[in-house]
Length: 466
Image (tube, rainbow, N blue to C red):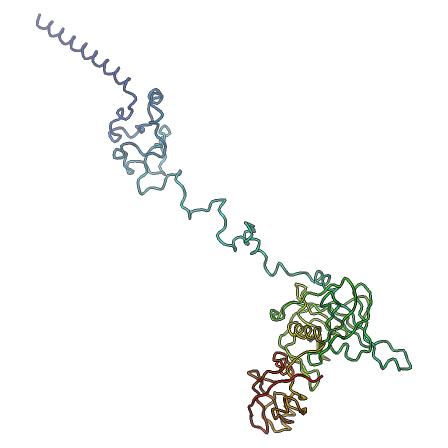
């Protein structure tokens, strides 16, 4: 009995001691709560519903120093103890409403990047990022700097409406009235018959027109858009190219802007401005397109005008010497001829050739060109057949003037010039263009057809007498 009592007392004392030691351990753990990682051993040994380390009790979180607060994108201190991805439910499986997602869970290498990671440069452009090319600037309508402005200025943006072109050009277009001497001796007071158009070239009063507008005139009168009229004098004229320059003394003239004929294209819109039929009330305006380029027409048997611009813009008597202009209000041609009986077929001397002639006429009153000393005639199939020639193109000599380059070279009547230098000569227009570009004193190769045979030689160009 006593032994049983002693055994019971011993067990009682042992239990009391164990309880006391346990209380001491609990006190120690409350003091060491600054190291929260020891509170959870290995997450894999916990039930699936246990949260990661950051889900501590409120007291423990308040006791932890700020430096140890885990950021959402930081991996756990012991990555090897993180749960395997296969142990987590798939994203499509509905989660327990009481469960909160683990914000500190590190993604495995095969998982998508964290939402807070920066996007790749190719994923999406920054809103402030400038477009890569000037083309994008134009398409998006931006104007980031000078380059964008320059790119946006396309040729189409420079084009004007027909109304704007006419407003710009009308002050530069004049009416020319010529009085023929024969009328002064007539018993009836006939009105002047020579009516044409001119284009103001400069503020000195030089006006470009056609030679056939003024060649028979004894007096010339120029009327401006304002209605003012001035007498004009002939500065120079050239029958071969059918161009002439006259001059008036007037103030505040508005010269026309001259374009570049070499840039003209077939199908381009053009506008013809001139005093058609001599009607009162200002110039007539017609619109069309460039129908063809490089046309040649014979004004008579001895003269061919080449490199003409063909247009379907209406050109009538009185339009001669007027302007053919583009949508930039630039003069690209001087209206010169129509085909009788033709519908919508008019011709203009290209402004590139007209500039060369006009400058020489203003400087010296004539066109300085290499002089051969011949009377040229266009070879036609009928003439060729009459002379027994196999060729149908070239310039046949109707006359050779003594003491000139042609005579010195031994040229004869009925010789046919087919080549000068390296240029084929098929008509008098091509002959004229060659001579303008080769000045007196130059020696050039020449090829002719004589009695059906080809003969080659050399010829030195001379000055035109007088």
